[in-house]
Length: 528
Image 1 (cartoon, rainbow, N blue to C red):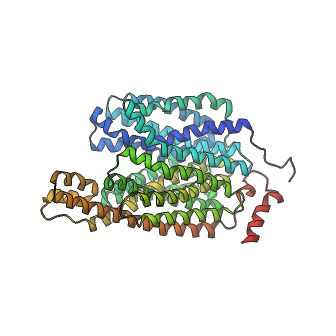
Image 2: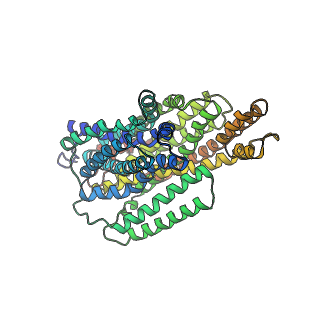
Image 3: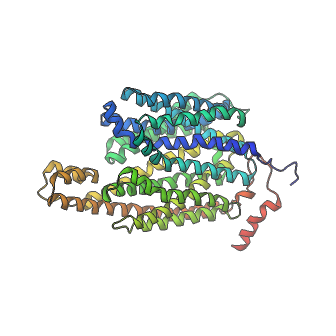
């Protein structure tokens, strides 16, 4: 490959631009979970009832999920930088409105706008990274840093939220978005290139409606099932979403300007990476939820102390996740992904043996987070590397949507598994009143206040039984996740064994790798 054919190397400007892009990525991740800590303060101040509380926490994630595909395709058509900056400006306005909300309706509406603005961030950021970093080695490093910012936001959300709520009023958790997005709006036009698909047509509004009708009901139904179990209502809602999804896919294959280009899936590497990007957060989500609840309900830790303990596996995930991205430049990605899956499976096996205490749980979570994080970062890298430049926004939207879907699906499905085990194992003393017994049998969250009201010795007996039953539920969920991660490792090896190391991976729209760049792949194949 000649110097003329070589992909252009990113310079200092591109790396500075990447730092700017990581800021809104981190912020969007922080906003996903920081609201949970503030909810008691909001409820006390604004008088939100239980239904309003659910909408305050969930509307942000709902609308991010629903608008990702639309915003990604919009960026492909009118410009990714333009969509990103529009999203940043909307994020500032909505954050100010949320911080100074005087009613629950105003806060819910502000959170809804924040969700739509957040949906403009992820696909635009990934598309711009794909545009700025054409060299495969630099692309892998850039995606690793992007993954670090995403996971850092998830990790720091509860910690930063706890600190702000300890020092200021609940609205302060929204104000932290203002300076961050201000940096984006100032530095973005100076550092970020504009890019779009020059051949893009008009956005099909019917497809937009169908995409929302597919995603929103499924996410809502899964969340409802995770709270209340699999009843007729959540199943019906999910079926409506799935039917809309079928109609959406049918339409995409028959119009000239689809919202989601189905030809992306013609590439085997991208298709397998999509499966990995969906399944990794799914398997981790349910086990992570059960573990977090275990810290609070069984070990009695406060949410803030739980957040501090969770820094241990989360920081390890960030460090090793980047190391995995680096390793994939010299080792076949299939082997790196399989290694991550096996490590996560071993971690889940350790969690399945937890009886009491937090030592083994932390070790297991660390291994599971590290393995699952490696799969998450590298699968996103493969998705973006496999997509042609003109479809970068659609690919970025797909990557972001898979994470949202996977987490919601894991929390709902594996959460129901854990709840079912709890209900079958909890032993309610005969002297507990019928209504209180029903609440205690429903979940450990219902058993704790009942036990406190009953006092000794009946309350102590109920509490011990509820904690033991919940621990068994967590063990079973972790065991299921261990098996699924092991299967995921096999899928990675079988589906991606032909994909070369990322340093030698030919990127669509660019020249093929040179013989020197392909050498690592040859060495790995010879060794295997």
